[in-house]
Length: 359
Image (cartoon, rainbow, N blue to C red):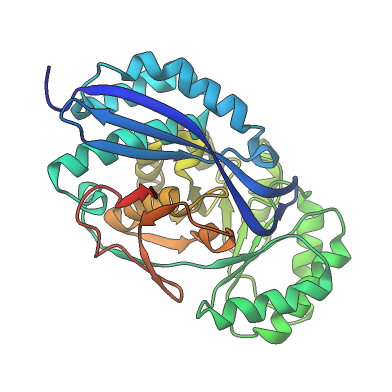
């Protein structure tokens, strides 16, 4: 048996309360009901991965994710971690519907492999860099809370503000954005509809913002994931960069977006499809001349740090949305990126993704 043979895979629930509900157009989450995967190699090296299912995003739950990981466990035990892409292909064939489960297993395998090699994952992914600048999100909520949330973000030293829109009340979305702009007039704004709007409503909102002299830096997935015509219309007529998220959950979907001319930017989330397929997505986007964004679900420092390694190591990610650890009431882990304001720094990590569970 090789020292890099995977001896065991363990799965457990990971429940982390949030400071406040994390709301998107499709619903809100008060507790991050995630899943922790631990992979142990034959030489005793352990690697850790996190699954962060978000029912309001794609219907995945903690229960369905844990079941998918358990289903795939026998494919992983006994495999050689050095053949991590073979493992990833097997996961895609077996539990392809469970993106967060695939992400957790692939993360744990790569973490164990690179810990044993003494290599940080940002180097494994290409070594292009080790720092990123993140935005921070204002989730759905009342108008009176929007300006206060923006002030809090600025006080943290973060300038780019992402705003969840599309809850069904266009006037409230407009009023919230006006309130945010009033206290943060220099902040670039990213508007994220999470597929909850119609293209006509989006264009109406953008027109109203234009009348208020509020510029939008990025428009992220305002229409449903299967509405390619709506995405194409927004690319043609919105006057701003349009990012695909729910429309870009697989390499095949991204290829369709390219063919349809339905996005300027691809938001890559490892939690949607796992690490191997995310690399394929990045390659397709780069070849097509699309810009890159890195994001995530409601993830702890573990999964967010993995995504930071992925984006910093490859380089070229112009939009960074790795903020959800700031929404969590406690941190069950040690290590991970060092955060100073908007700056996420991986340089202090010597091997793997650098995150371990607290004793």
